[in-house]
Length: 136
Image (cartoon, rainbow, N blue to C red; front, top):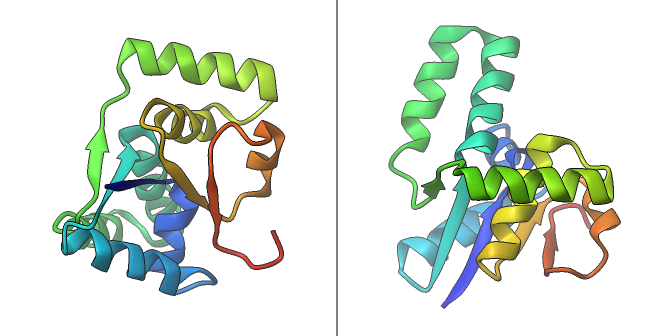
């Protein structure tokens, strides 16, 4: 079974109907049919909440995240082991720490990272990436 890891930008693309939203939606349908798994770090999930909170206020942030809850996205905790791996990725590749959690989760699960963030190019070919923007 194929496994995908969403970064914050992938979930935001879906929620804001931006470039790549149809790709994320298709992955969710695939996961709903149990043909794949979709994982997301709780750190990246919190990043999505924080972005909506900043842009739209607490009421909208809570409503939006409540709507996300039923989606077939498995949230993974930021365990000490994952935090250390994310820190190592951050140090080695100069990624933002929050982005490093998505990378660490993808590496740990031999998963495809779903993103539009070109900063992940720094990691080379350590794991497959599904780019939401076609110019990647």
